[in-house]
Image (cartoon, rainbow, N blue to C red; front, side, top):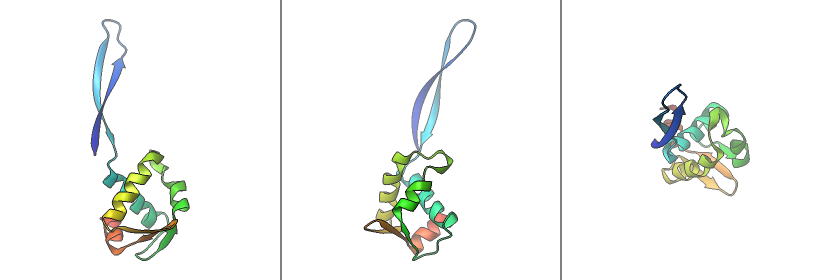
Length: 102
């Protein structure tokens, strides 16, 4: 995961203090694995299952995942052979199923 620095002001009576906290943002691999877990966990998919992307896009933001992380995750999954993309569908591969349950 990538780390981003976030500055948070902690209210005190005197003087003011600033605290820096490292916040994690998901990498494309993290997003891809979230997609795979949704396909296998939510849709109970096995290798070869074809899903409409629209169905997946509706549930991707579950558990607080930002919708903007979907495209990098999808691209990562396709590049690594975890999903096959055609038109508006995704097909789960054996490698994708293995990555989802790992």
